[in-house]
Length: 163
Image (tube, rainbow, N blue to C red; front, top):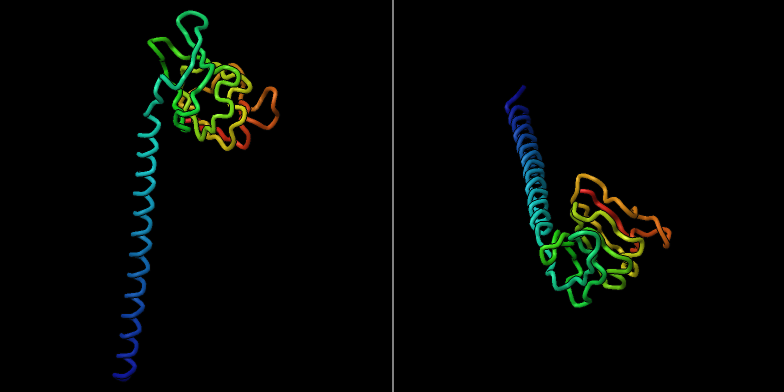
């Protein structure tokens, strides 16, 4: 091989090597960025789910024992709802019929204390994300059953995520 061929080969090899380093480096950076973004998103989601909605947003009635049923939700309260475990030191264990009717709810976090959600508790709300924070499905009235076919507790085009 003459000098010109050697220089050309070396130059091409160098360019190819640089190209591979740039491509692999970019893939590694993008991959690490995705992992970091996923961790940030999960952390933010965990923080948000740890919040609560002010007790004054809910109207309740007593039911069996020292327990409460949510019967209404104030329209001027946040559209992201965190069902409380207790209100005024009484355990909230039910969400009553039409309790969140036509409130423009976006998403609802439901913890393990809720044992019953009535058929039409969320009627008139659309595209609601229900986040169930329990290792067991909510008992009582099942999601999607009841008076309005194709809904989740009355909410149309909605979904459930079990955490």
